[in-house]
Image 1: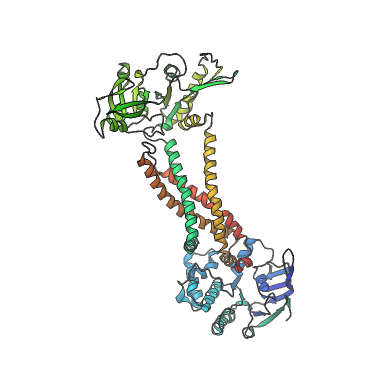
Image 2: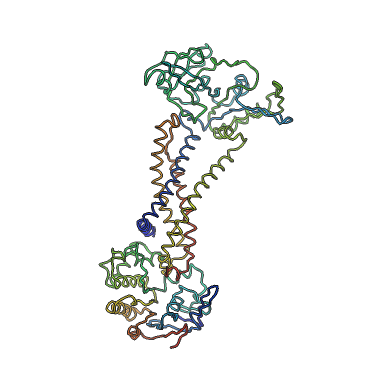
Length: 221
Length: 412
């Protein structure tokens, strides 16, 4: 489903060059729940960003469903992200000026879908994460766990084949963290969604199908 | 999608009220001035009381005599006999009027000095223009042939001289040591319409100028009314043929070798008088457009700065939208649409301010008898100006922000 070949990512400034990812080769199979672990600054989020086409690798290829994604023009890349990928971020990244329902339907704004259909699908997505009673609330009126559930609803509304989650439980207490993990596992088991999750939490990673460890930008396991 | 953009625009406007105030203040002030200037230009150049036939009228205001050998030039209004001989002889027009340039004189009433503007006209003057007679009627060709000393005055003079609303038909006034019987009172004409604006209109037979003087220069001009607008080119051609045959005569040591005289439409005649340039309507329109663009671009540049910082605050939102499938082009569209919403709000405020300013101009007599108005044409210009302003100030920040790297935007 996702294939990374010889991925290298270098950050350059005028004085310094930092190798964030070094020769990463990784395949994620359809329906797999993969977790990525490693110490802070080892390149976990960079790897996830490269997989999610949010960042371009300095070298190497990213293939999703056999299609080479790196180097695609902006318009195609945007469509690709919109249709194939869903993101869940540690700090939720909701638009605070919009109510929950509008936040959730955001990915569908960039598809040819009518307003009423968007509303219907957004309500369905919110029902899946148990937040249909908070549709008109603004993100600032919700708890951390509720915000992350809104973020998950936004990630799944477009029915993407892959969800990329960057420390989705990182800002939550263990109870809330477990709730979020349950939702992700449910999506993986019952709907067959492929999930790649960056985490610091060993317990969370144990619940996934496979674990990849990074150290100083290199894959160690 | 537009609904979503509108929601976010309103939310962003509410979020930083001071920035919003500065933006809206800049936009609305700029557009207010543009709307008022447009209303004034519309008042100047569009047909209005009493010159409602401007569209099918031509004007000959100036005769230019050139001595190219000595680089000498004389120009100004024409003599009565010149207008009569060379312009009044046109066959194609429906009507031709002869009118003098406006002059000033002082009148006295109850030891109070009243400064008045007056002009001499023929009877056709009243047929070409649609004056609103509050009482009485205009003088006729027969009155002129009978050498009657009669006048039409405007409402302002009647009120100053006889008292507010007091009927004055049949009464006399003294002007330049001559007595004139008042035969009509008209609603005042704004001074911005110099062909028809005056306090007193006198028949040309009462002028002290020698009407039989054969010299070319004098104090008269001509206004030509066509039957149809389509006839204007034919009338110009007919006059060009006449003008070609006007003999060039020397006078008082001035030896011209060329004569320039034309029939111009209203805007051309206005511009020639203003800039003393020939064939300059394109020049003036270009100048006005240039001034408007410069005028709009300065606050637009300022707004670009404000918008850039406003959009920078929304870097995270840009990152989110991009991550979930918005292309750079879609984002540019979103921010431009948002900016157009903002400028349209500014446009609505500007219309309200403009109405207040125009009401003040019309009632305060800064421009006597002015009738500035916000009509559909002015509204159209205001809307287009708002859109151009919105585009000018929205495209660059939107383009810059849309190019932002997603990961950097999300970290912001």
